[in-house]
Length: 173
Image (tube, one colour):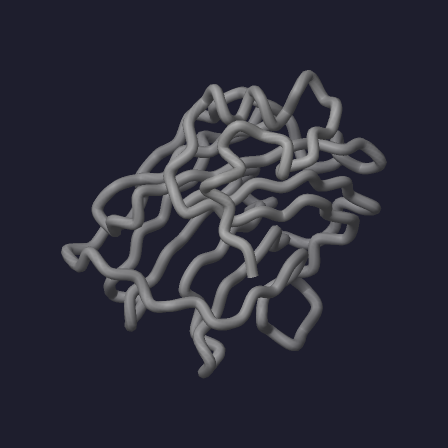
């Protein structure tokens, strides 16, 4: 699976600011992508039925902080093969970020996400809101590669996902 989107921030506030979170019908997270402001890292996590069985991939500490995206559009893509024992790959503006597998599990299945929350997580506190805008949030049914990230970033000029060569792998609902 892969996810891609453009984002622009209105403000840089909060410690854990979520790009997206998929949850099951009970509100348990199945997949999440967020910025950890205390560590200056972007983190992607997928869970099985319990938090004991999960995979977390995080970037090395970023040289830039989220405040550089206040008022500026940026492109992000995360791709992962769905196996809890392998790390995800992350791309920012068409460049692959160094990632580390920080948690892994023996299980190879991920719980099914029924609900999608963009720019926040399912908590009611509002403390994890990523204040800004997002466009072209796209789910892909295959692992994408660097060439896809470069094509989608297109030198910073938005490309309609329906015009991409990989469009046949888009999940449409």
